[in-house]
View 1 (cartoon, rainbow, N blue to C red):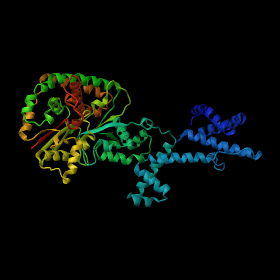
View 2 (cartoon, rainbow, N blue to C red):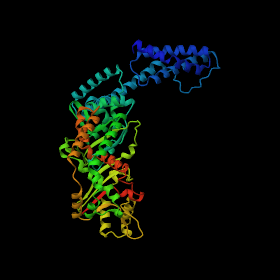
View 3 (tube, rainbow, N blue to C red):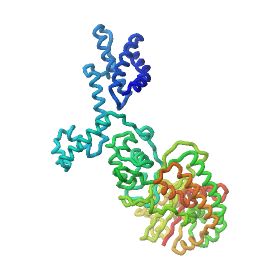
View 4 (spheres, helix red, strand yellow):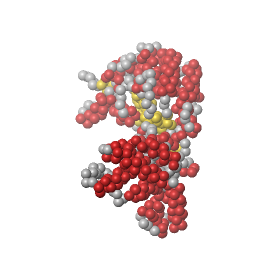
Amino acid sequence: MEKKEADCIIKDYVKPLYGFALNKTCSIAEAEELAGRITLEVYQALLKKTEFLDLNSYIFKIAHYVWAKYVGEKVKGSSQLQINDHAVISQDEGLDAMIRQETAGTLRREIAFLSHQQREIVMKYYYGSMKIREIASAMRLSSGTVKWHLFEAKKELKHKMGTIRSIGSLGIHPVRMSSLGHVGSPGSKGDTSNFLATAIRQNIAFAAYHKLLTVKEMAEELGISPVFIEDEVQSLEEYGFLDLLAGGKYRTNMYIEEPSQTKSESLHRLYQEYAAIAVEHYFLKFFAMTDVFKETGVYIPNGDMNLLMWSLVPYAGQQLGFRELEKIGHDEVAVHRKDGGYYAAYAVIAREFNVSYDRGLYYVCGDMNRISEEFSLNAWQIDTWWCGRQGGWRDNLSSDFISLMHVIKGDLPQNHMNIDAYQRLFEKQYVLRTDAEPEINVVYCKNKQTGERLQAAIPQPSEQIKEAAAQLDQEVYRLHLEGQPRHAHKYVRYWSQNSLASRTMRTYILHHLIDIGMLHIPDPHRQKGISTIMFMN
């Protein structure tokens, strides 16, 4: 270590070392003497070394060593001074031995940063006492290749042992992700929330999002050994969350949003503004068309038009998406996963900041379509704060809608054989218990003709709405683009396009309709059935 750096460290530790000495001796005079000895030993040790696994621990190991030596000297002249610290280092071990141990720890750490193949060769040769020809046979390599790897490994270790290995920002302040989700079809192993369920995987994905990194560089950024992330990186690459590029470098293949208070507030105001436009120029028509919707033959729970609007408005919100505004196709961002999934993955970095609105009111999951070709059934659903459903897409099961269809048709009798199906439907509030027959609590079209009439009755958006949608897309794209790496611009564009038809916008539209008194929050026993439409036959 350079003398200037050692001087700075000693300056920082003068008071702590004096406090250590005073605590051990309980005498100001002896403390000053002991602290002086410790400081000198620490200073000399610092000048000999260039890197420390744990500087603070290293310095106080020296302090304990000097204290033990000091006590030994005193004991020779007096039997009254006792050692009451069981953690002191043996005098026989000596300071040089302690320094050797520290060096060995550094060496073990640097071996971990070698490539997988070189690390295995070094471990077999130096720690496993295997001969070169034995290693070559075990690893199916030539003896010359093994010798070359040993030479390169020793050269790398010699270089790195003399330098200070830095810890990246993620090693000190790791990120945490929230709202891990997908657009598309998840596979047998789930979606983004399953693959990025651990902190280490989340930070691997974030580390390689803004710059290309090798496994070794990721490890340095995370401040951990490459041994612990090699398998994680391999798995994320295998399932399409990381792309392996030239030079052994990886790049994250998903969208990661980094929210801020300023951006969140700007988006909130923007969504409020355009939700008001969408309501005024499109959705208010729905409330003047109640007779038209009734004439389609659609089933409305309890004949309550408010319940119909809670389902029809968010369903019709899809009409506010326009093909000409689709700049990036789903196929350009979706990935075919090894487990059969095909979806675009996204995550949001969890940031702690306050906003002027209740973010929980704008929770949304969907659009969720559950299709059964066997029963000619298509069920649509979107989850919002008002519906109170739990479990998101994982708890939205095709089997529930198939059971519901059989209840509607009257061919699912309430007996012990069907008790589980009915219990599930009652818990979901798709069916309500009554004194008479069970009541269906979901909007549905009983046949193909009814479904076609309902679809035809939904108004088409005007050119004015289309112009507003284009303007909103530009504003949303501009806000989300800030701070995003160039390779992620297509993801930003994908998630910013057709924002007027987005799930988030539909929660703002529902909120606005409540605020102006057009929608009323349903009774608690009705809420889990809203924002759902089932098309039969």
